[in-house]
Image (tube, rainbow over all chains, first blue to last red):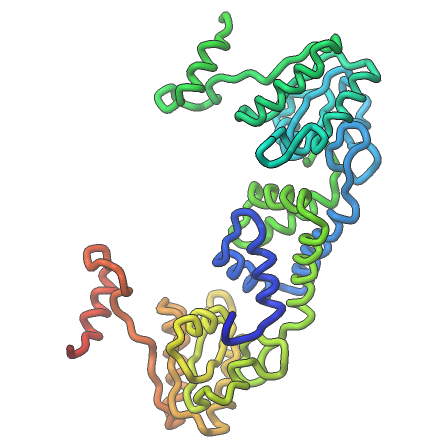
Length: 201
Length: 201
């Protein structure tokens, strides 16, 4: 409504929504008008949920995943294997791996990946905390589960050089064809990974 | 994080975001994780903007558009022609029409359209307020600018029957080919409208 109507509150909401990733000016406007028409209860629930994540969420003291307590539910779970660590970039990677119901060890969340061009070095990540965990002992294997990208691979490589002398077994997630895909549309790197990583029947 | 981590605050935010139109579970999760990583200042600005639209925004006492005062900026503007009313379904339609910088009259916002199947009748819209405005006098022309849809047309037709005896000129927005389109891809209704509404060079 710029230009004609100095509707501070609506414009401000559109502006704030527009800051979110994947929400352009048109979508922000559509969402704002939806919220204007929505019930007060619904809008306040969203506002309260936003406040709550900043007031109640912190990092787990052990694995740095996000939690509302001192330790996250995974670190507190006595049925999980504490000798097995899976290093991931983001909390959402933990969510994704947990969804597969395959992994029964603990995690370490780096909160990013090394990106020298963006000034993200080891000290911006939770790498010191990871080294401390390893030094305390009791870790048998560390699975590098950073993203299969240039930066993710670089981060895993850096970590493996830091941990080379630690006596811990270092592994990384398998690469190959994505399940359910067709060979015809696989790119060169996928096919190279799939051939290189082939296993006996 | 369902099943493994009772992360109340994060789950609640994902749930609330997921209620918004066009935001599915995946997008809600992505947005929530963005907000978790975003600065406290940014998240609180969004929460505050949400609160503000419910606390500060009401309907203009004259045209029913959304405003922060008694009368909206358009109704307050002495340069606008008060004898010309444009009837629209939603506040966002006012925004769209204002963006064209073509219209210099006032508006009337219905806040919906007649939809008997959804139990939206005349009393759910601001039709009584529109009739009052007309009865007060001083209105020369009413432009029906409801959406060119079945329900929008139905609403305009209903209004025109109510106002037939009022002595006010009733018009509706022109229909035809959308500017910048190509004839080849126009549908039958567009072409029929374009032919029917043809004007002399």
